[in-house]
Image (cartoon, rainbow, N blue to C red; front, side):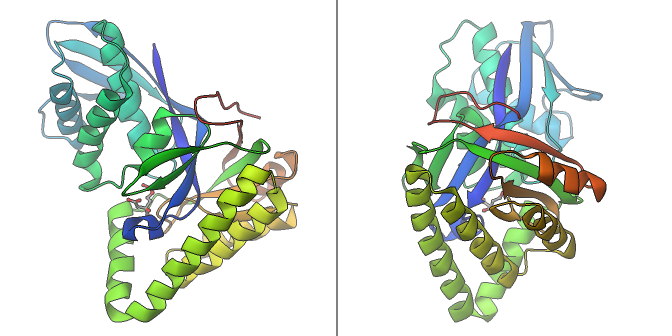
Length: 303
Ligand code: PMV
């Protein structure tokens, strides 16, 4: 059996598309996958079934992944513990977990470059040109600094992070949200570039806060990042409401995670996620907690 994490982006989404670093954290909820030899290849994720090369995105992604690994015929089953399309990295986690299950079944070493290449082939079907931050976070627990040139770099945390993750709205298309920011940048380049440089400064300071274990500082930077994301028109009323509820319940910081337009909000908690999860549940928001411990490679656990 193989596993991969979902992820949250603590700071830097959208700006990462323009070369600014982002900070991502693997969360414990993710994907479990297993593969066994079969007469013909097939994929089952819960109730969904696909065959390589059928005319669904899932079938095309599965074919691309099997091709990248030069895999023999395998029946693959996966369990998805994340809501898809909500900025929590569900599709990258599927790609990484399935690639790991295939390598495990074929007796190959779980070489991370091969896993990431196969996950990139899988992701390419859904996102066209993914930045790679999701697959990198799916493959490692802990926190990563990621930029398009240097790829993922592990961050050592001064203190564990307790996160609350709430679903602020229905899923939105990452592709459309990224295109919206690109159109805004064409119309108002100076305004957007200022926001991107602001986010770059926040990410640089957040790295220092994470390393020093300064969680109130990190929370403030997440709040500022949310303001700049609102200025890029990727926030929604539902996202702002969830952030407000979390801050009123004691969160050190709260922001959207991923592409925005709906999807998930991440709140940094002060010791325990319970007051924030309680406030969200009372408001009808689906939510869960996750802790991020230590550095890349260590396990993260649900709280
Ligand atoms: O919604 P997600 O989890 O796929 O996050 C997308 C992050 C963006 O910065 C908006 C896009 C990207 O390619 O990095």
